[in-house]
Image 1 (cartoon, rainbow, N blue to C red):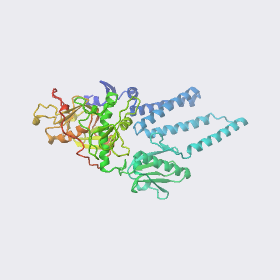
Image 2 (cartoon, helix red, strand yellow; image 1 turned 45 degrees about the vertical axis):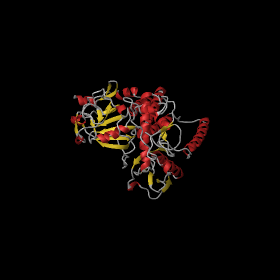
Image 3 (cartoon, rainbow, N blue to C red; image 1 turned 30 degrees about the vertical axis):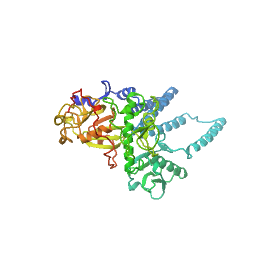
Image 4 (cartoon, one colour; image 1 turned 120 degrees about the vertical axis):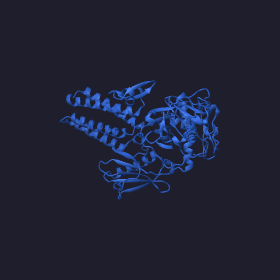
Length: 509
């Protein structure tokens, strides 16, 4: 087996420890070491389902209660693992969770039928009648509409009907012309999750009133633009929820998008600091330190007042508002960062946050900067010849201004900025040969035009995740909404404190 194929068959955990993907126990071993890995969680859950079915088969054959108890314990574990996998972002787990949940219900009905006595005494009949009345009352309570909203994290079906969320406009063949209802969703509530919740909740109410009638609910925004549609074609069909391709995450204008972007940049730096150190800095100057602890050169300017100053009092006159708080390992880091760091503006809308990450597409020589699956930047890059740019998950381990500063500019192959990867042989850096951008010509490093590298450097903090794929379009869906990024919110001036004059770098350019 060639070295490249051997490497492709190995999963790098950390500290030089690898797992073979051909190992039949690969997913179990990975889950033991990475208990929050959603894909490993899913596969272990599916294996538990197979184990549970073996116990169930033994119970049907022997009628020994021990096997029934083992089945119930194992299938509950399977269901919980697959559900948790979906909640942590492994989308493929959703339908399997619904299927397992439904099969558990049907299995319990079958077991009850198998264990039902062939004849009943008068006393048993009375008890059965009383139980049926109680269950009917409980069932009515469960299925009557309630005031609490249906959240995507806790419920994935209405009346045991799974739903599927689809980005785009429904095909004409699925549109129901007879029974249409329209709901209005205010701009402040027009996130994807809230649109889905509102559509499912209204469809649930219509189902309660007319459970045999095909129904569709249309959501419109304050400008009467369609932003979502839920369709149920009746009988046992799944519900289909379409979210309009009009980007309605918060119906943002361009300046609001810029505020979201710059807030995401400064929050990402705080996120990576806390993730690395295990505590919040007392003040945000901890993010602007000298090399090698230089998370950000400068804070970005928010786009309304064009300020980047930091305050701890909500004066609302621009810049950033930082609230120090104690951090513990059991806290959700993303939520804590959102609370700790906000724009110091008269702006009361929620600003969503997921930390920045970099994805590199080798097949198309592109570098993407994303928050979750939303593109913030897209740069052309030069990559390694003969497939020498490594694939897999890495992170930014160093940020250097003017790498190899003592080398004359015309001979400095690393340009004006560099960000070393966790594999210290490789870096994302500028170039002295801009004509090579877009080609596979380096020894494995990622080359960029100097001006674009300077912008990337100003946005990306230390420890940011970098993932390199052979063909990104085949693996991860990413969203582009035609957003024109700002060019005046980040400082591209070099900070001498971020230079490393004592090191001669030898990355695989």
